[in-house]
Every structure is written in structure tokens, then in C-alpha cells.
Figure 1 (cartoon, rainbow, N blue to C red):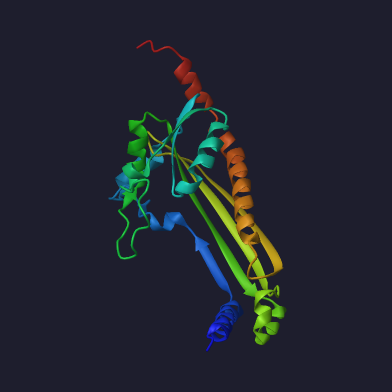
Figure 2: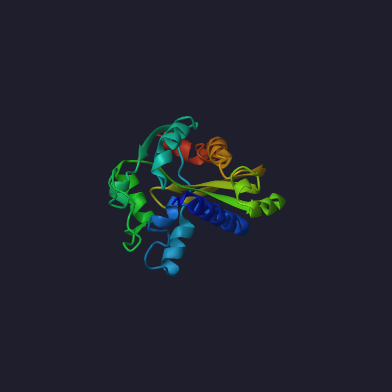
Amino acid sequence: MSYRLPVFSLLAVLVTLSAACGTSSVYRPGAMAGFDPLTPPVINDEAIEKAFQAKPQIGTGLKVAYYTFDPDRVEDVEAMLAEVPNVSGTYRIPSLMATGDRRFDGPRPYWQPAPTFSLEKLRLLAARAHCDVLLVFDYGYKVESTPNGLVALNALIVPVFFVPFLDEKVESYLDAYVIDVRNGYLYAHVASDESSQREYETIWSDKATRDVDQQWSTLVRQTAERLAPVVQPDAAVAARRAKPDTE
């Protein structure tokens, strides 16, 4: 007695039911990192006044420390920063120092909360490396699949495997926060977004994956272009540094 046909039919029914409702896949590594941007721990009038009094201090030949929540994209970020004008060197803040995660650690169990770390900690690690500016990169994407009119053909079971009854939407973002290491001044929040839509895809289509990769390349290019004017030397700071100290 063969069980292949019932198993085959059950698989088809499950695929049909899930497609009929639509699916959504979200990738946001920063959401699982335990990052707490609400610093300093005590927020009062004195802390607010101190933040308000912070001034830009960008000079020439910046050394940039950066932290990215997605370790799989770190090489692309490194290469991008190397091409930004006025950046003379970079330092990647390792996850071991920020969160305690080692390079080959597997995914953390859902019942084990991520260790909390803060913006202040990242600034401290950047200061230890004698960096002028801290960049924090947050990246994510979402893939949504929704059924189109051809989903009605899936009632025949077999067509579910080759009928293009899915429409797909892919959205990606890359946010970069540019922060002065010495005084916490926020120079800029550089935000880039990309989206694409495809119609009539089968369940075997890998075009959404290709769209994610293509959007990432575009986001990196846009971020580099938008960072360039942000990290240009401040005229007053450059003049101050060029002037000999006579005191």
C-alpha cells in the first residue's frame, strides 16, 4: 500500500492554505540584539542640557568606528566606508566586546534574552580605539507574498506546484546613525529605503532573494553618497586645529 499520494495531497493542501492567506517574512537582526538606545540611564534636565550643548567636532582625516547588527554584511559596510571622503581609517566594533557573542556562536535560544548594551558602550569602545565618529548601522528587509486570481486553480491540487499564483513585494532599509564619540552629538540619521513588486510568481521562484541582494547593493551606494557631505570637516573645527596653540 502506497502513502505517497496522501502525503503529496496533504503537502499541496498546506501550500494552498498558506498561500491563500498570504505570508510575510521579516529579517531584522537588530531586533534580537538587546540594543538599548535610551541612554544615559538617568534622563533628567542636566542630561538633556548636556546633550543640547554638544557641538559638532568633525575635522579632517576622520577615524570611524562602526557597529552593524548584521555580521553577514560587515564586509560590504567596511568597503563602503573606505570610499567615503574624509575617512582616513575604520574600526569595526566586534560583537564580542559589545554583546559577548563570539564569531561562531549559534542562534540564541528564544528563552535566553540577549545581553543589553547601549549607545554609551559603543561610544566607549570607539573611544578606546581613538576614533572620532561612531556609525551604527541597522538593516532589515521584509518579503510579503499574496495570492492573485490564479489561486483558484489550486483547488485541483496539482497546479499549486507550477501555477504563478503569487504576487511578491520586497522592502529593504538601511539606517546609519552618525554620532560624535567625544560628546554624543548626533550629526545625522541617514535613512535609505528600497522596494520592488513582482506579479505571477510560482512557489519555486527565488526572485525575491535576488531582489533583496540587489536592494542591498543600492542601499549601500545610497548610504555612501548621503554620508559623504555629513562627514566633511567643519570649517571652524579645521581652523581651530590648524591654529598653533600659543597658550
